[in-house]
Structures are given as C-alpha cells and as structure tokens.
Figure 1 (cartoon, rainbow, N blue to C red):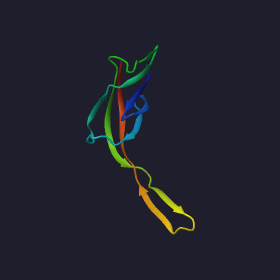
Figure 2: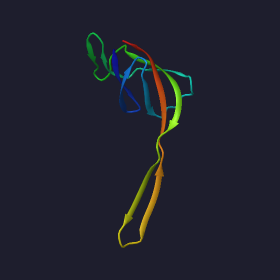
Figure 3: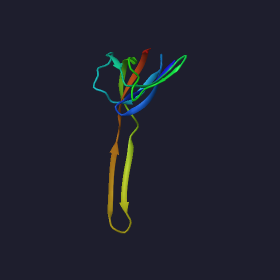
Figure 4: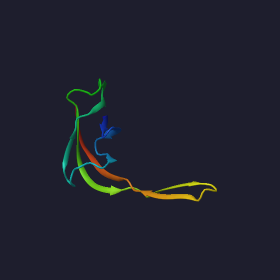
Length: 102
C-alpha cells in the first residue's frame, strides 16, 4: 500500500517504513506529523482525490534535519569584467512514514 502525498507544494510517494527527504518543515526531531493532503491512495483498489482523498492521512515521525550539497552559482559576461559567485545549501527534513490511514 502506498500514497501520494503533497507536502509544501511538492508531491511524494509514501510507503510504510519509507523515509522521505522533504523541504524543511517547522517541526522538532521526534515530533509526530499527520499529513492529510493525500492525492492518491493505492491498496487493493486505487482512490484518486479531487483534489484530496477524504479521510485519508499519512502519519510520519521527524527523524532529523539536514542540509544538502552546496551548489555554486557563477555568472559572468565575457569582456565586461562582470563576475558574480553565489552559493546555496538547501535545508531538508527527513520523515519516516509510520502508517497510512485510509
């Protein structure tokens, strides 16, 4: 059984026992979350929401917060002495899916 859930505007496939790396959420380590924006629920039959499946939820626990790899953005224009360097490092929250309620 799996579910497609929407978290912070992005869609993730959640299965029981799986870990999801999502954009940073305002939740502490060990906190329990109930994600109720379930778009699709698949088991014996497939339920597709319009836009969400009524009564379905995914229960998850926050495992950790982490940062992704550093990305270097370098811009330049030839012959114009224009160079700009900028770095970015995305913050993530790791969730462990405990249960899919549907």
